[in-house]
Length: 163
Image 1 (cartoon, rainbow, N blue to C red):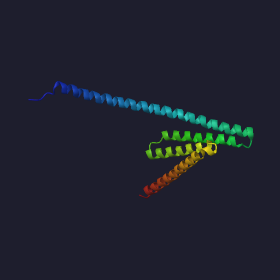
Image 2 (image 1 turned 120 degrees about the vertical axis):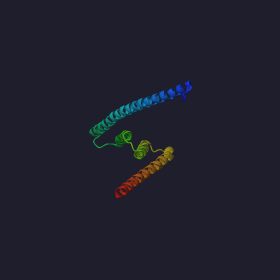
Image 3 (image 1 turned 90 degrees about the vertical axis):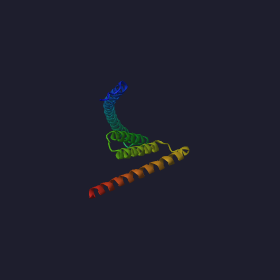
Image 4 (image 1 turned 60 degrees about the vertical axis):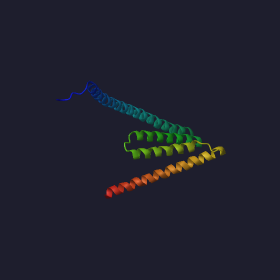
């Protein structure tokens, strides 16, 4: 005689099937929403990058036309704006990276540029000597890591080409 599932067994089996369908649809919907937001954010950041580049270009041209040979404060302003633009470029670049190794390397490069920008902006007063030393040491360490990782990547590519 065939066994019939109990009423509670059928109910919970149907509930599990309903739960799986809702979970799959919800996951698909959330994935599409997150991807749409990601691309909207990338678009906004690319537009912001264009504004940064235009602003930097305008400052260079206007300072040069106004002063001729640039003085130190003008050069410092242009340099800090240029480094900020490099940071925005690197951030936009990270949105397009799919390889986690390259993503981490790019974040390390962003950290290096941020530290260098901070070192440039700090006034050299005796009270901040320890901070400047710490930032200098950290940025040197970041630079060494970046160079080492690029060396490793080149070596790995040569090994892959040889294999």
